[in-house]
Length: 62
Image (cartoon, rainbow, N blue to C red; front, side, top):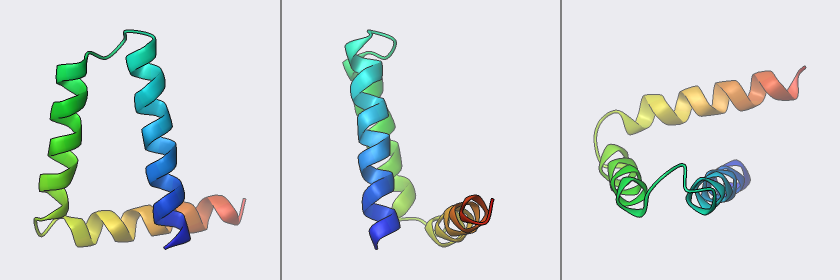
């Protein structure tokens, strides 16, 4: 759970800076956010969660 919250904060911070630097428009940010929500409701959410956990574990061992 702590990893999920920190990743949400990290992605939110990256999104904020992309919007602030005008690299990403508000419409594109909305589409990216909605894509994330819809992706989470599909069968791909399990493998994505496992992949994220594996990457975080690997980074922790470096």
